[in-house]
Image (cartoon, rainbow, N blue to C red; front, top):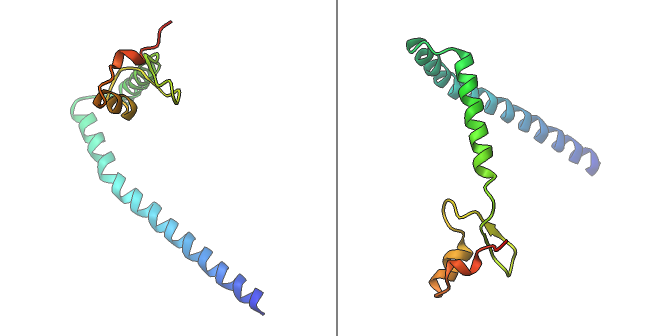
Length: 110
């Protein structure tokens, strides 16, 4: 008997999960609709074609990939973690600098 009760409760919970997932999809769709409409209006206003959007999107992706392929310039000798020298310095660099160490000591020498 306890096994049947467990299965019934489990089925009820699964139904509730499915119902909540449907609600989430509906909510997500409702939130996206005005954004999409705004994009379409802007495209019409500025005579932008879907092909131009696709090309711009591809260029942006290529740029992001190229930017992320920057070689590492600094290495933490204790952990092996690396940093390209771009963007915000990792904690191990900032901690070392606060302790009076030079960033140059972490440079990767080829």
